[in-house]
Image (tube, rainbow, N blue to C red; front, side):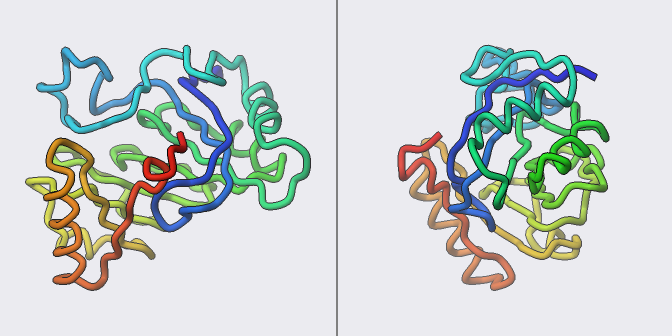
Length: 210
């Protein structure tokens, strides 16, 4: 199988339970909840995405003929040494492209493999870390994993119901839009009301990282 990748880069994980960890990010092109084009945003299931995942023209992006080629590129981004290798598969929706060959090749190269997904497709069973960020109006089938990341506020999502899903970490992240200050207050209020949740901030934006 070939893979369409918007961009690939080495950075620090900026949000969630792994915040601060050095990681290679592989951003796959394409999503099943929005085309990525502004003309379609109003009619999309996910309307607040702030990520460009259209095409393969980003830094480090391209079309990779097979898993071997993609993992070789990830190795180059990581650099020398295999210690604590960590890769984050994101998008778009990465589960549209992730398969056995890619997971096996990443593991063979010593990478711990994480995914950031909307949960509308089952996560690969051999992933090392599963982060699901549900979107209101979508049918989430992946209701178990390591990290549940709730972008807040989202009308149509009930934090109480989400607490019944089988995740080790429950994180609430303020929606980054024109009402960012109010959204941050709402996220903090949710944590104060429901202490199972922890506040997650997009520290990569605060630090000027990608």
